[in-house]
Length: 170
Image 1 (cartoon, helix red, strand yellow):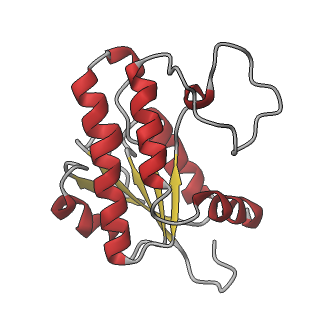
Image 2 (cartoon, rainbow, N blue to C red):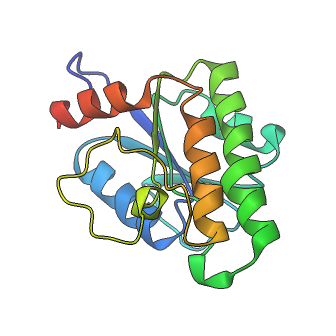
Image 3 (cartoon, helix red, strand yellow):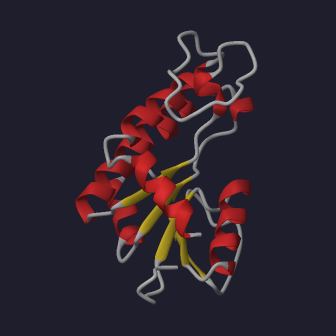
């Protein structure tokens, strides 16, 4: 919650999925107002305003972004689906559209859920930090698109600094 006393509004993109739904519940418990954007409505909750649309269509995203202070992007196909076209569409094209829409409405805080596989090189990661280089040989196409997703997400703001400042306020 903002120190000014204003209740901040979070948009959880992919909020109908496992991670997004749990994140939404935790944000509400911490005093945030929560909105969800997903491809389909998978639950009902009087505390959450749910938007349904295609994350690759800016016109679907813009209404959900109105009045939002923080965007959490959790949408991704299951890595087990092995659907290359869907991975590319959601992880890269969708994220690119989200970033463009966030810039358009002036979103200042953007948090992306990614995957440790983007830096995985076949051995355990010990004491890993945010500045690890991307895997030169991604383990699968899902990971390739998650790397693309991270790169396009970094175009919105300095995500790392903002995410750490967000965590410090918690």
